[in-house]
Image (cartoon, helix red, strand yellow):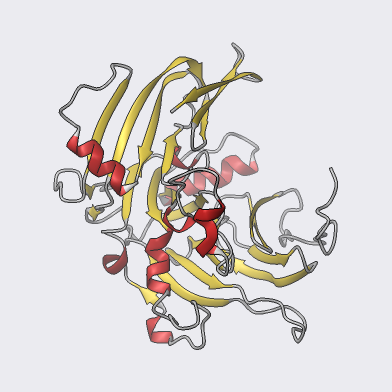
Length: 370
């Protein structure tokens, strides 16, 4: 494998990724996302509840860092645009949004990331700790200077624009007792107990809509940030823009456009494929056809934003009060021809990974056309 011909340097070397003064045997967890010229690295300790996570932003074309060792509390990172980055903040229970400045001839040293907004998450019981907070986005956003020609450059009609694709956030929340057990099991090199698992789905444009108010004239490049306007309360941005689910299966494989697949953790021999579609037009069409006959191999259910029975997410063990979430979606349960342990998705195909009888090695890949 050869380096990209336009790369400023063929490799990136980190001398010390995470401070491990207490235990040199703790290996870090590294997450990498690439969009445009920017590469974002989050490096966090694998020990439950440990501090010391850091964020790096590297310009692969220029061959230099734009930012180094920005403190973070969770590995989740995704691009809203090639110069706008989000990182999930488990310490302050929010989603931090950063602007990545371009490198110019006058640039010297590392640039400083500018925090644009903080989208607050719904409050949990104060005794709980978020031990894992991640996010997975669909295909990477386009450069902000070339997005207008995106549709013309595509060979396929009706391709989903990156701004309306979804991001899936996954949470693991622990009580003090579970957290103490996790730390002990980690130190004893045993399987670590799991806490409460949750998922949240939101479109990229739900965040970008708030950012456009910063500087609509200069295409979101910030000129000044008013500190009092940094945080956006959950009740302001969240209920109409999100949908919550129990479990983290929706975040096991990357979403595709406005669709994602539920791959339940530990379910290694399943036949059903659960596809969730958050395209508003597909929701409207499915809702109009809900009483018509559908193939026996496909079960369809529709949840719309005006349905009060499905728009409250209740989890008394985590949240003091119910969460309102009104993002509509279509859920399709499709019967696969054989058992599989994981499914990926493209615009046209479901890609089923089938393991051998011991479920230890990949045996075959089965494609199912939509």
